[in-house]
Image (tube, rainbow, N blue to C red; front, side, top):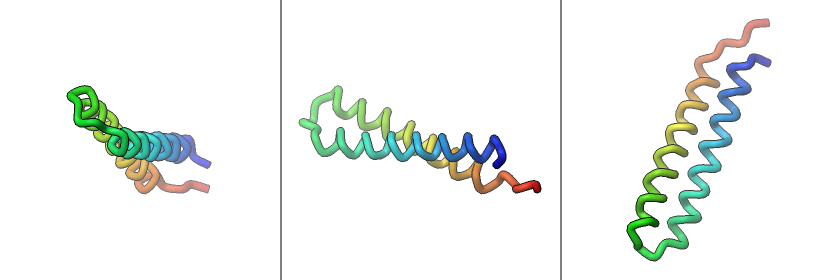
Length: 64
């Protein structure tokens, strides 16, 4: 297996974890300023990691 695909899978898993954590924070939010900042930070980072990981997996060619 190619090292780029492994790194892409790792980024994808981290992105999914960040998006799930964002959902948990969103469900437990009370509307405070700190909660909104957490939602934005973890949501954006999770989305960036997820999209980057999927893109890296898709664009890496398998060479036998």
